[in-house]
Structures are given as C-alpha cells and as structure tokens.
Image 1 (cartoon, rainbow, N blue to C red):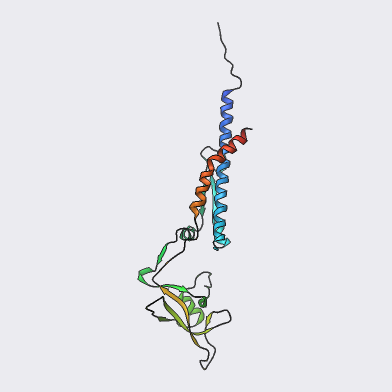
Image 2: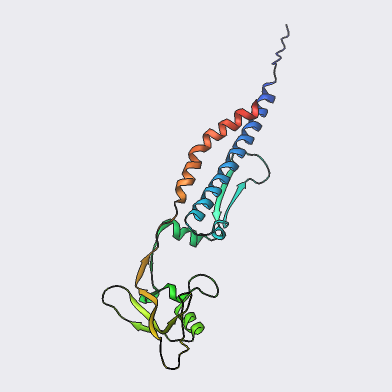
Amino acid sequence: MKLKLDITPDLFAMMAAEIKAGERAVTTATREAGNSVKSAWRAQITGAGLGQRLANTIRSEQFPNGRPSLSAAAVVWSKAPMIIGAHDTGPLIRSRNGFWLAIPTPAAGKSARGGRITPGEWERRAGLRLRFVYRRTGPSLLVAEGRLNARGRAVASRSKTGRGVTTVPVFLLVPQVRLPKRLDLARDAERAQDALPGAIVANWVESTL
C-alpha cells in the first residue's frame, strides 16, 4: 500500500508569507516610531524657544536601509548633541581654571558671529575698556563708561564735555551657573517605545488582510 500526503494549502508558503508580513509590519512600525520621536523632539525644541534651526538638527534613520526586516531599528539623534544634551539635562556650568563666567546684559548686544558675545569681542567692537566692579552681594560686574543708544546698547559717548556719560553694566560675573532644563527627550522616546508593540501588531494584521 502506498500513501501520499498532500497538504493544502502549502504550509511552507503560508509560513514564508507570514514572515514577510512580519518583516513589513516591524519595519513600518519602527519607521513610524522613529519619525514620531523626531517630530516630537523638534516640537519640544521650538516650543522651548530654542529656534527652528536647532530643531532641524534632529534626524532619524532606519536600519537596515531599503529592505524590510524583523530586526528593524530606528535611530534618532541630533547633529548638535552638546547643545541639545545641555538643554535636556540642565547641567551646572563652571568657569575654566576658577575664573568668572561673563554673562552679557542686554546692553552688551549680540556677537557678530551670532550667539553670546565675549568681553574681548565687546571691547574691540565698542572701542571701550571694561572695568571690573566687585560686589560682596550679588554678581560682580564688568562696566563701561559710555551711554545707552536707542536700542539699549552700551556705546561710546560722542560728547566732548562728558555730558551724558554713565557707568553701564555690560557683563555680570558669576563663578557658576545652572542651565535650566528645557527639554525632556526621554519622555517622547519612552512613549514611542511603549506604543511600538501595538503598532507592529496592527501593521501585521493589516498586511495579512
């Protein structure tokens, strides 16, 4: 007697199709999670008033690239990690070699390169010398003898008689400062991670219908 076993449908074909569906589901859900974290981080950065330029440094990439995989992974990172990390952790910043940290007042204006101006750059630009004023209570000062222009910036006085010249605080001097924590990047990453299993299942079911 000769027996022949014929399995319909083809189990091997079904298993192969299910694996492919799983690969697509995992890859799609992982890509969506990475894009979600990227969008959430960018929204946090702009919402904290740190600007669109810094927000645009947040990037995401998926591995493997260009093909579905059950081991798909997404990486979200910043092209300015030190700046983003500082606003995410709120570190204590100390001056180098025990010197003061110079915090510009509104009278100092901005650096020509953008961002925070240094005392040396301010002196070169304004053509004035800064004078150190020690204070026992509160931060010490770097001041200049000049005047405030219409924009509230300290500039040299054009008066030949000294009329209108005043002592203008240009920099505050502190030994250390704590940067306020303005971001919570881990919160968005954890939310995306918690939602990932459900997203994989939903995409898997959808791909098999």
